Every structure is written in structure tokens, then in C-alpha cells.
Image 1 (tube, rainbow, N blue to C red):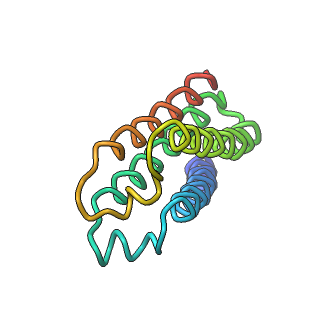
Image 2 (cartoon, one colour):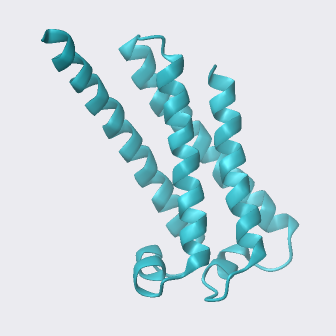
Length: 140
């Protein structure tokens, strides 16, 4: 019974770290988009903003999963790794977004608020997913 209780607490701790990291990712996407992200997605139903946020969250989730798997059942190493790799992954995703913005015409943040779907958002979303996958692969 103690193992179940311990496993549940460890799972809760990883879940909290993952949620905090996804919250930070949400804030970073919100900063990158003109206007308020929650209004863009939930009120205006902006698919561009939703795609970028979803890719960011999936990228972070991929990193957290890899950090848990790579922890080799060492909770301290795992929880610190989740936080550290998660923050690093978010920084890499933000840098990739900024580099893409610099390398392409127009302002990528402004494209995100356009009510019409835009192909540039797909490119940015794939960058988020690829950055998450690269960090995840580096963990193992």
C-alpha cells in the first residue's frame, strides 16, 4: 500500500511540474500574440492562435514525458530534470519563434490574430513540436 501512495504522490508532483511548465508556455504564447490569448481562442475562436498554443503545449508535454522516462526511477533527478529541461525547451521554442519571425516577412505575432488560417502558423507550430522533440531526445 505504501508503494501505491508513494507512486501517486510522485505522479502528482510530476503533474504539477508539467502544468506549471505548460502555464509558462501559455504565457509565452500570449506575449507573442497581440491581444489576449484566451479571448483569441475561446471568444474569437482563432484557429491560428489555437494551433500555436496547442503545439507549444504538446512540445512541453513531450519534454516532460522524456524527463520522467529518463529519470530512471530517481524522483529527485526526475523532478529537477522535468523543470530544467522544460524551461530549456520553452526557451528554445521562444528563440525558434523569434528567429522565424526575423527570417520571414511581416510580424508572425500579427499573423496569429488574423481570423483566416495562415500557413505560417503551421510552420511555427512544427518548430515548437520539433524543438520539444529535440530536447526530449537529448534527455535520453
